[in-house]
Length: 49
Image (tube, rainbow, N blue to C red; front, side, top):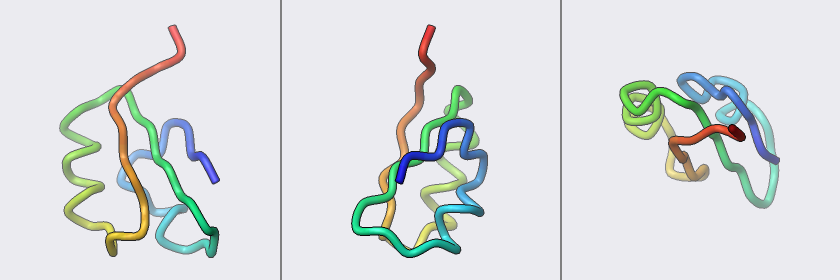
């Protein structure tokens, strides 16, 4: 499951999937999402530009 524009990873924390990836353009938001995560998702800074 890939969540584009994941913000703080709220959606990823509430779904069941074998692999979860969150992507957001804001590095500060990704750092916060990693802190809040249960260790089951991967977070990346980036965009599709």
